[in-house]
Image (cartoon, rainbow, N blue to C red; front, side, top):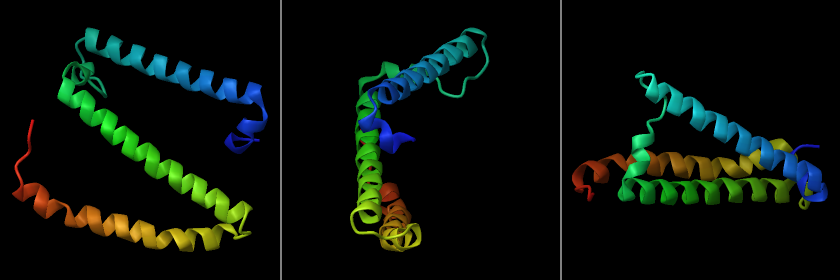
Length: 118
């Protein structure tokens, strides 16, 4: 079954959403417990207290969801509609992967040169 069958099965969809919410709630509870105990948590909740940080996190999350959602949708389209196998689909995505790698390596120079606004 998995995530591709979720649109055909309401209970599977609700189960996946509930499981994700439970894991997120447990993770936040665990982090708060670590902070109260005085140990250094994996993620400090003080990050979420500044508006600039929240805006950056929302923007980065939206960008990541768009990129991953598009990749997932295109890969599914190529395999289901166009009939490509997994290797052919992976080869098609190689150009995009190399482009992302090259741009991320090239981004270091302007990031050091341009001032950061906070």
